[in-house]
Image (cartoon, rainbow, N blue to C red; front, side):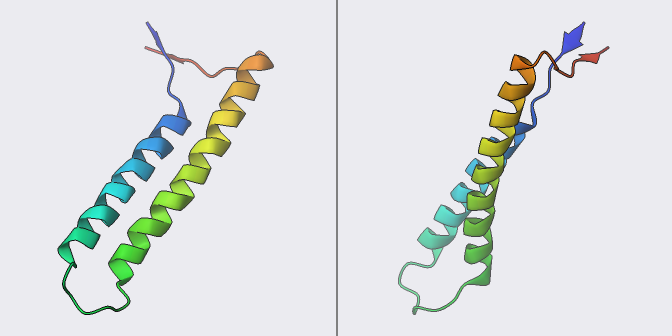
Length: 75
């Protein structure tokens, strides 16, 4: 049995979960006085950086497949 594991999908899910956490943090802070929230900022930064990492990994994986190189895990 062979199985492919793409790093791009891990980055995509990490970006999605970080964005969901940021959205939940925003909802929790409605009505609070304005101010800097380091946890919210961290979630937002993680979502953006993981989105960029997803794009880079997806492009690299596509180019690797086009060049005939593809890592396959054997069980």
